[in-house]
Length: 258
Image (cartoon, rainbow, N blue to C red; front, side):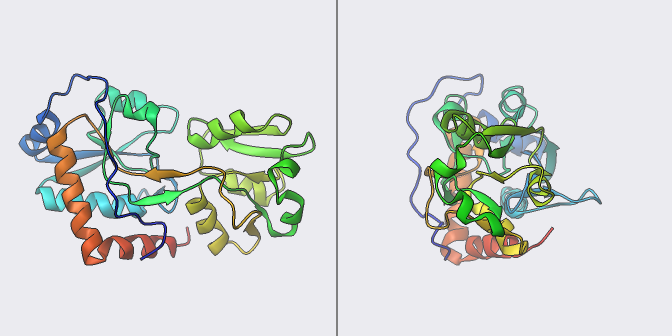
């Protein structure tokens, strides 16, 4: 299994109360015979919307398994990184599955499943520029332009860490790598899983610090504060991990070039 996978359960402490009481979210899903999953469609290998409207990625394969195991219909609900938590709190979808980082800010309003991918922030640039950007000190210069996608943890990290570099803001994550390839920007500091995916499929792109990650984070399914739903999702994930199917889903999507 990929070393980034983790079998350990994420311990969830007592969180801020929401309108969803214990069991209510799970009961609604079963009663409606439908699970609505919020996706951004701009973060491969987790969630990508193709030109024909089809969605692919790790999260979409997992969501299909969740729906099948729960015996309900799967409905994908478009959202965005800037509006993710707003849409979630407004009840536009039951669970969020789009490569969502587990962090304290989100845990104020949501429960998370067991983590199924661990990663850290790391820079990616044109392979010819690797030596130019092989340290944070070299990156954080007035002559450097770093691209960020608004609304996600990439933007938060860049704004908190980079004091001198210029930040080029894109509204979504979908075209950030095009901006590196066409020379509009110098690099990006995304999650290592995304950097590895891009470097695997684009010969021009390389991690400039392949053995380093600036942070440590985990990805999981975000859901209402409903222990019954959390238990069910974790049960399905545990079965997938034990059978090896979770690793198969991840490896398959890491190998898909969009």
